[in-house]
Image 1 (spheres, one colour):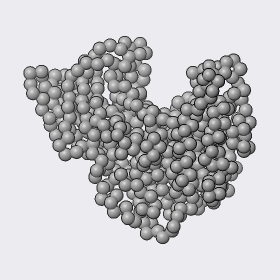
Image 2 (cartoon, helix red, strand yellow; image 1 turned 90 degrees about the vertical axis):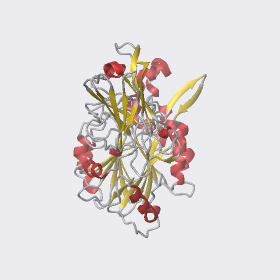
Image 3 (cartoon, rainbow, N blue to C red; image 1 turned 90 degrees about the horizontal axis):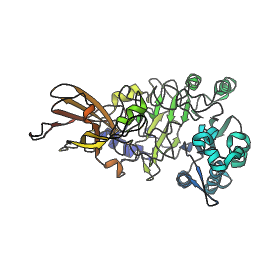
Image 4 (cartoon, one colour; image 1 turned 120 degrees about the vertical axis):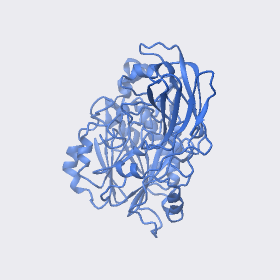
Length: 509
């Protein structure tokens, strides 16, 4: 993995172009820049979900050490601020919010780095801060009937002041080294999963204040739900109801940084450009596993389906483990570009190639999906790689009125697609055709798609499982598996023929 920092542009560009790895390209950024450093550096995380655990009279906070480790890394990179796009407190307790403040002060006492420079807190509330005490009856389970005084929701302003020592405003504006940040707290309604309301006051704020933002520089807007029809496309879990997209479409220099979805930053659609720029910042707490981007198809190891509960209960594969996904970004702002470095904070390594966003934004927008799909490089299996397949037995997931029971299972072992000289594998497309008729198309996330490509988990073969009796394909089976990148662009497939029992299996390219 080549780490692409601004200081490395000149020496690293040729290698990256040769590999064909870089998703966004360098258009608009000067490779020959002589400047010694960026104008602004800031850390980006979301959904840190600090969670109170009270046992035997002692309080501990899940997620606090990961948050501390991340802040320490940001500190060592010389950040001028840190953004959190909501869900600071997992259960919406004041005690959790106070822990966020304590961890912050342990790394940045008096909001200062060790060299004395000011480091700005750029935080907003999310739905868990607003109503997390309702989820699973968390408030009552922790504090009994007298839980209300412990909730942030009881007094948003008082909780904010208690945790961070600053006055609360539903929408705030801060200037950091000449760049504008606007943050809007979730204050409106319950979590709806899609068409979120979240922040209804944003349009009015921009009507009153938008003309005071410098149009010659990028500005950064923070809220919890992602703007509709931007990052990850129209089917993203947790998107808002469209009001932010409509509002920011008037500001070509706007960069929205949001959270809520927990979708992985390894998915190249996590950054979008159209009438403005949007970044879905994933989660420092855990990576989500539900994606609806394949509609009407669904991955066998995620949680989405047209009839989600019943369809998932019939699947053989369990949801892929992604609780070890702790992701974020570091932004370095220059006159001619912004470099967004994607980080895996579990392994403290680079998560994926940097996104280099040219400034000012020009048509065609470089990070539009259309432009990057056409130029993206597909992953490829290594030379000599082979599939293995067999019919075996296993159990379906069960639940939601579907019984978990022994099933005939088609098992396909898929080797890891090579990353040297090609794009990164995110998922696999599996096509199964029957000699006696029928065809099935299935998809599954690659192991470790959400982790650094250097991690062990991202270098494990995938054991693909599907209920053999639910396949449309009949008779001898021809199985083809294609590795796909984050845009669904596929490399060359591997093939395997699963014959009748008395015949010898044959590998096919």
